[in-house]
Length: 299
Image 1 (cartoon, rainbow, N blue to C red):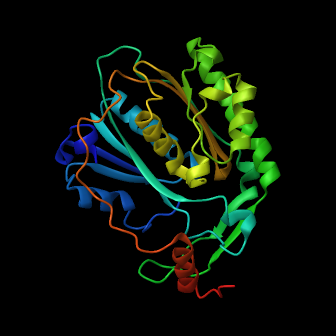
Image 2: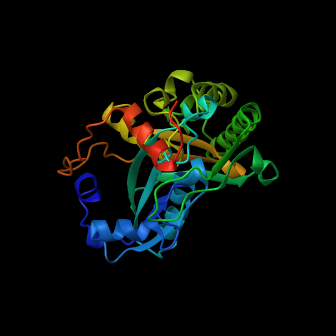
């Protein structure tokens, strides 16, 4: 992971921030498991859950800790298995979400005007119930069971998401004196294409500069922005010195916008030799297994 893309020994990592709303365990925190798996024994660890904005909140806090000298570097991760809490018999919800993960390695630099230039974080708590999963998951170590009660009011979420992301995006651009047309790439939270287009139009960023991969994975919550960033780099959409706008919105109702200027390097130092285990099941077979573990009938 970080040793391939960033040429960093895991033992030199000083902080691990894991953003998710589908943690493997709540206690102890899941970031400590990442430390254990990586062998990053010198890293402080904490989890963060602001749903779809989780990675952006994690980026903000890690960046602040680096700037204030508490740590010199940080590994920030967005990782989700939304297939677990999704009610698979409800097509109004089940078709929206997916699983995925990605990570960024942050460290201090002496370059000027590189990294996070401006950011906004916020929450519309009075409307928190319009996007909610009540109760959560079965206890660790037990098969996943249908203990999740979803409340998902799509039209209200759409309006609030567009307004909050657009307002925050306009504010960060204004703070640094950047016009929307000067944004080289917009990597928004991938909830759906309509929201992405509406935010870009409202802010004034050309639609063709908004990166979209929701059609490939669906909404992978806290992992959407980091996964999209990795793919933008792989597709050569990210150029050295690019001004990148990253708005997000999630349950809570949390919102954020981050404006950053990318550094000179856009390629990993080397390819990772880590391989994912093979999957010998179809997507439908995997869903049926999840439902069987919950004791749900498969119709």
